Image (tube, rainbow, N blue to C red; front, side):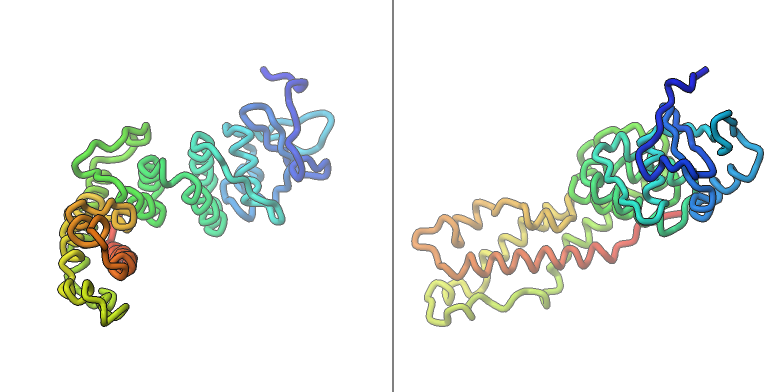
Length: 295
């Protein structure tokens, strides 16, 4: 049994002596809060406070104490999202972000709080922890966050390479994982065929200098066509705009078109960068239309 001497009090604003309820975290930190604020944001807190649940009393305060299984980091982060006029915490470690998401689901917070919480976790942790976030989103039926995680997976070739194992994969169904693979494959097909409609192609680089003999010589865009062919194979495996923007220019294109050629045309690199940006934007457009099947 924990003695009161080992209990500490949270920092402001969760230390007000006029609070009417106390939350005691699993690591023995007290949060002095107001029932009405938490009840308006969470039906779970509302039921907890107004039922004869796991509350205890202390001789030095009239406020009832409710023990919760979450850590002080999780509770403080949750309260800062709920409380008005407080600045919410950005959890730097995903080891802290995961239990926070689980608490968000457990306490059934309002949609406004939920969206802010998902945005914080997505912005900070999606790139490195997309598979874990996808699994949690499937468990709690958060389609928007699941789609964001699935979109992040497009940076990797998950159809041919092993997806890095995360503990949360033990908690999702084979169907959920199958839907992720189907989404990746559908995006791959869409991205591969993004150049089939050439309306988005920038005007020929001939416009830079109509008197340039090198521009006139390559007016058929031979170098661009070779670049497109190389990109299509990569996009089928990694259907993300980053594949276009980060890809190394194939040696064949660089050698025969502009980068390594003797006395290269100065207009071709300018057009190439314009074309690559437009290509990435078109890939973004076509994959944004792909639906993630979600039950």
